[in-house]
Amino acid sequence: MQQIETKPRPAQVEPPAEEAVHQLRKPSPAPAAAPVVAAAPTPIARVRTERAPADATRPRRARTIGPAKLFVLDTNVLLHDPMCLFRFEEHDIYLPMIVLEELDGHKKGTTEVARNGRQTSRTLDALAGAQGADIAKGLKLDTTGHREAGGKLFFQTETLDYTLPTSLPQGKADNQILGVVQALRDLYAKDRPGHPKQEVVLVSKDINMRVKARALGLAADDYQNDKTLEDGDLLYAGSMALPPDFWTRQSKTVESWQSGSSTFYRISGPIVPNLHINQFVFFEAPGEPSMYARVTEIRDKTAVLKTLKDYSSGKNAVWGVATRNREQNFAMNLLMDPDIDFVTLTGTAGTGKTLMALASGLTQVLDDRRYTEIIMTRATVSVGEDIGFLPGTEEEKMGPWMGALDDNLEFLAKGDGGGAGEWGRAATNELIRSRIKIKSMNFMRGRTFLNKYVIVDEAQNLTPKQMKTLITRAGPGTKIICMGNLAQIDTPYLTEGSSGLTFAVDRFKGWPHGGHITLARGERSRLADFASEAL
Image 1 (cartoon, rainbow, N blue to C red):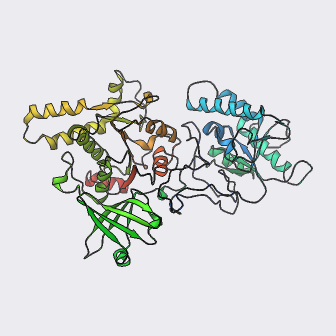
Image 2: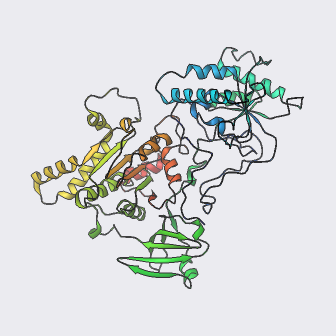
């Protein structure tokens, strides 16, 4: 097994943009191994994150042997992912003329949707201008270097005859696309010279559009390539319980040695292929000593486990904060490790994500002098109605969004003040504030952070593209902590499967300098814990 997972999935290059298109859990899947699936009885052979952990390099899916389908794309798919034309493997793509007209109407502006519209137009122009391109016979999708696309692109070059119910207004763009799909279905229903039989499928991000298509007896499906995971339950948790008979099985083959205050174990057996670098493992059994360790090395059929530092004891407290449960101790080991450059924390409200990140940051900035300052940012997505423009500088505008920072700093200052008195506490607060900078994500492009401790709060509201922009700001000596609750996504059209936080957890899984942990138990209050479960 390879120990480091560094290759991204070849079928997913650009993260999806944040725009006005609808997303839904996928309906019945299709037999073809295309990124978009049609309504058919046999399921798609799609790679799922936790089903085959030994497959670290994620090979590209083998193409299915069978007739190629004809996918009719709605405009919102092109505006959602401008690279979607190359995501359908051996299948053909058809663009109605009204889609090109709508695409032209969205090209103006500085929004993500407008940028995607312009990029799609440039892609279509490059395909049409390739050597030997013939629109009548279809444009080969692999002529611009995208070898994974084996199909052709067809434009609507003639008027098609179709009959829709009179209750659907003919002038509406959605209904015109439905008419084109109906005409193509009838046209490709049987083999004819120059027109082999093909299944015609509408692909749209618009839920109502898909419902209307199915009501008319047309095959329709959502665009699935933007989903990092199909099911939020499959998200990598970062920790794993060892089986009760673990030591019994390992008794003859395990090696152990001491280095400093840590104990190392070299283990083997069937559990090794299921492990990832920097994954936490724990053994808890009645009547036996517990063990908590982190995977530091995977080589051939063996793995090395390193025992953890116990941050739950008062002598190891970080800025006065002692961990209260197993997962918090795992997280603190990641946050305090200088060899870990990227940490992701997920968990429900009140699990201590922000408090632990701030406490470890203050310790490493003020006490250890490992980083020069803390930079804190978050996605400015409101829960309810927007309150409008905010006055002041960049930091003053971000102030109302940083209530979590103020709450946690108040708690940390109270615990650290001791007997310093009011003047001492005021001086401590001033020192802490001087080392924490609040920045807006809007001005991150082009920046480089050197020796900074960067905290990205509410990261579940970021798109994968925004997440990539933030992480690539890291310069030498910088540590980035991304945290959020995937159950509290406020960004429109973003789901647990397509969130930037999910994207980062999945892609950094197994990297030697990155770690993830899912915090399970809330420690805020009994009221908050009950509300998280009951509401």
